[in-house]
Length: 391
Image 1 (cartoon, rainbow, N blue to C red):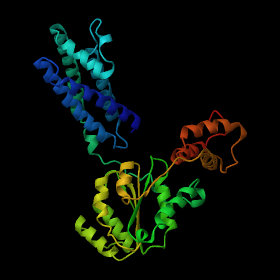
Image 2: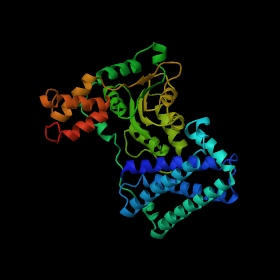
Image 3: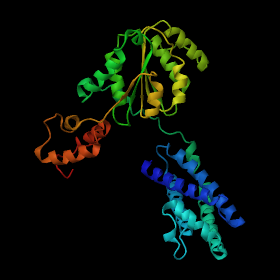
Image 4: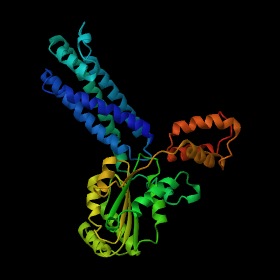
């Protein structure tokens, strides 16, 4: 499914729902019948909004579903246009009202006091209500909602290739790696012996998972137990705990399928209690997930280490060891490293860029903004193109 289409539709609908909610506030003198119609519109659009969110997870919807999404988007635009037209000020009022959405709401309050205007608005609202009914009826008639129940294709973790990237193909990683090793291994003896949590933070595409994996490989063998686990935006706690348990035990089946979270946590804690361990928890999206997962890691004095990655600064600070600066903010690649990575991927080697493509390559790199994922994606696309400026 074209994500841009769904995102545009969701964005338009979100804006309309906010405006409909504002019109329903007690400040506005809507006719009783109009208020009922606005409530109907809001309820219909909320249902459509929920449907669109589900549709965004369906990889290959049929043409009927795509048609319905287009209709919903057009309906959202029509309703928003209608609401905005209600908020146009009568003669001479606009200059005395604040600009923006608040200004339009204020003007709308003035208009609602005019009986003739209110009846005109009532008529327009009824037309919009009828449009919404027609779209919903068509949805029900052709059973578009059946598409949601169809299983989507198996999803592939986009971070998977990062686990198996060869060190020789990485660019600009030595500096961050050295700083992280220093964070994880150095410090006062008393502090170093305690359990320490270090967090890597940065926006998507900067290579947090790649850097964490390099650290994991670099420190391999220095700990009695190691595990590398992805948390994700919608964490499955039992799956995560079983994954940790299977890695630290180095066995395929170490837990009963019937075990709940508490049993899994108790088993992991008991196993790690007197061991030096190193755990990487990748892609944490929220503090509740970390609070639950952290219960599995016992405090000990064997210099155990946990490395977390997240794109949210507050989550990174929450995860990291308190009272110490254990948050490492990963930065975009420098211009030199960006160019090196781009040329390697697009032309096979750093010096492989043809002279006639140097200028356009610089323009492309500016747009990539030092994001390794963006550079690799664009370079991989261009590697199969003809070496012309137009391509």
